[in-house]
Structure formats: structure tokens, C-alpha cells
Length: 217
Image 1 (tube, rainbow, N blue to C red):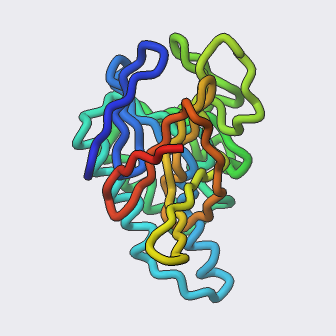
Image 2: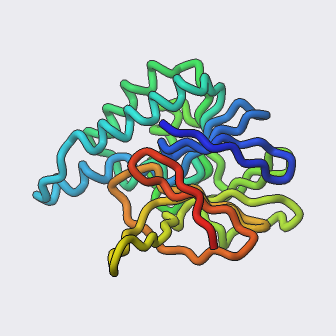
């Protein structure tokens, strides 16, 4: 795991190549778009997605919570992919190991499980944007409400295009911080990427082979 420190509006954040952000002042771990259970839905349809894809995602989350000793975990939307399956039962058993850690979910468009399920998992659900200090958390960047706050979102699954030798081009997930809005990479590895355009004063860090690579505009 590699770390990079950034400061936005007086807030110090540690970016991790595990696709999470640690907010030091709040002792909180932030992530977006885990889409847990997505591989299980594909297997239900007869598509041979390995079970260890899901297990690796849970292991990265476990490692991140342990490493930062986070008291709070904020998921900025799409913690789960859709309706329940056996993978979500595994999450419930996994959650017991972190019963002392508060889990918060700012609901995204894929978070459609019954209210009782979130209660059983001891996850506090927020149906709209949440403001903490001078930061707004909202799943979809289009739902940015408090314009005087700095917004952190998910939903987009941001990626950047990196050019190699010759005509080689590869896309990688990234952290992106614009002047008023930031985007977190999709935590789940079994997700797509949307290539974003960066401005001259923006900050962007590509996640490449477990390293964080600053991208200049």
C-alpha cells in the first residue's frame, strides 16, 4: 500500500493505493462504489467470475481499516450492487469483526437493499448528502448542493489515460480533486472506468500497480 498526502480547504487527507481516503481530522475512512455482490450476480447468470475477486475487495477493506485504525467508515454510495446474494451473507459475518467501527452509507443508485438489512449490518444509512465541517459527501457529483462546501463524490468511477511508449495507452483508476469537487475511485475492482479530463490546477493521482502516480495536466 502506498500513501500520498493532500490538503484541501484545510483538511488533510491520506490517499491510499487501496482505493480509500483517510480523513485525519475525523479519524474516518472514505470510499465509494464498492459494488459488493456484483460478482455473485454474474455467477448467477452463468458467467464464471472467480469468487476471490469479492474476497480480495473485502480483504483490502479489512487491511485499510486495520492500518488506519479508523473509528468511522463512510461509503459514498453503491456499497452493494443490487439485491442480496450469498456474498452479502459473507459481508454480514465479516462485519462482526468490526462491530466497534461505525459504518455510514450515503446512498447511491445501486443501494436498494431493504432497510432491515442495513440495520442487521449495523450500517447508518443517509438518504441524501451529508455535510461534515466544510465538506459535503454526495454519491453523484451532479447532486452537489452546498456550493460553499467542498464536495466529495463517487458514482463516476474516474479513470485517467496514461500514454506509454509508441502508441500504447492504458486507463487506470484515479483520485481526482478539482477546485470545488473531488472524485473517489471505485473501490471495487470489478467495475468499469470513465475517463475524466483534468484542468491545469486540478490534482490527480492514478493508481498503478499498487502505487499512486501524480498526473500532470
